[in-house]
Amino acid sequence: MSHLILASASPRRKELLQLLGVPFSTQPADILEEKQAHETPREYVERLAYEKAAAVLASEASSANVERQAVRGSGIAVLGSDTVVVCDDKVLEKPVDFAHFKRMMAMLSGRSHQVYTAVSLLTQQQNWHCCVVTEVSFRALSDEDIQAYWASGEPLDKAGGYGIQGLAGKFVTGLNGSYFAVVGLPLYETEHLLKQWLAADSG
Ligand SMILES: Cc1cn([C@H]2C[C@H](O)[C@@H](COP(=O)(O)OP(=O)(O)OP(=O)(O)O)O2)c(=O)[nH]c1=O
Image (cartoon, rainbow, N blue to C red; front, side):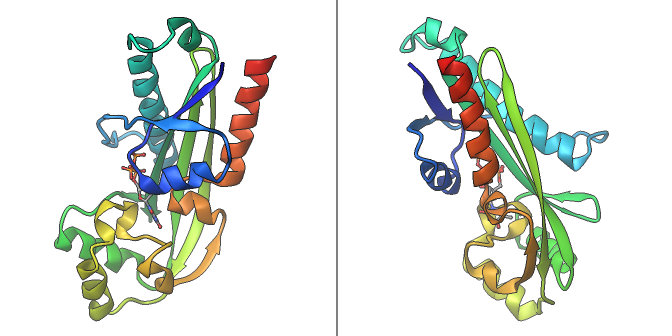
């Protein structure tokens, strides 16, 4: 029997995956998220999405609770995803403190940037994957905007220090690509990956 595991601690990814109607359980992946100097932003997010899925698949394979046969077949699939904000080819991850956040907002203010989200759907046999790039434009941000947004607590656990689905929505003047990819999981592309897995599993 097929079983899907979401390798994520993000409540947003969980909510988004629920919209696709495929039952799943969640298991956060504990991996080191550190960009290597030679990696492009795309290579970096794709690697992290894959490593999150691979870490959970490996722990499932060694778990006594799981039918080892199911893991070896395509019955168990693990979905890993990663999102980064990219501005002038610089990767912006989660802000570590206010000074870091302020530098990020100064970069994003009054212009456009890209949000990269990669998804990896991994079984022992295959890695179905995609990477979605979305262009997001911000209005100019004042010092008051930046201070008030930091005080809201929203920026801390978000790539680029903002959540388009929350208070930062009012900074956004335009978007070209996938809104859901910016929030953490591109729905159209993820459903396509799930269909490929389910077709392979039943075939
Ligand atoms: C740009 C942007 C990011 N984000 C979030 C999506 C991701 O959850 C997070 C980027 O960090 P990630 O490292 O991609 O994900 P995560 O640490 O939250 O969860 P996990 O690795 O366990 O799957 O930023 C928003 O919620 N809204 C936004 O507008």
